[in-house]
Length: 202
Image (cartoon, rainbow, N blue to C red; front, side):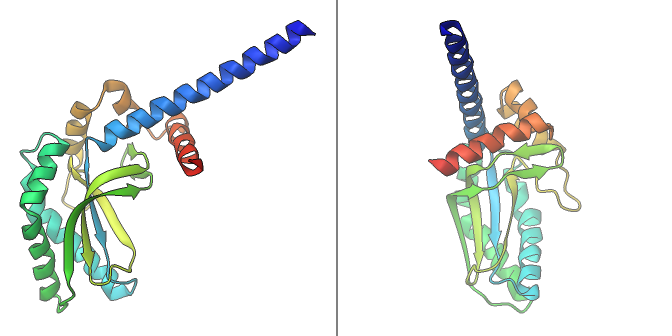
């Protein structure tokens, strides 16, 4: 009986250790990923069809005119510095774009840490967690939002390629971390789901 109880205790201990190791590894990987990217977050004035359409028009304009600012960037710190230096410019892009559409709603551009859900960019998966972001709020900011990765460039819209963004992200991460997020396989998703569950309980 003692041998059976000892065997059960060993299994439980090993299982708990394995779970702890997976959670710790996934949380560390998530933090390293968050420390390597700058998100773009645009919040619409409302959920009306017009305001949601304006949100996407502003998105396209910002990516087209401000996206090139980050071509010389090689890190999150570089990208954040560029974004801060050009925050007024980015805000003006949004305002002028709206005016051309006959909309004179106020616009606020800021850089802040925000919580993002799991997001797929082609064959890249970014885990949920807090990321540094350039946030553009249109009007009341009461509508559905849109987000992508401004640096490295991974905004998957027409006429924009994600390949250079993937290369920069690959250079910024450890090889095992990049392998973790560059596959949409079940093990990859389950690691991050475990971290989501743990975070929700804390």
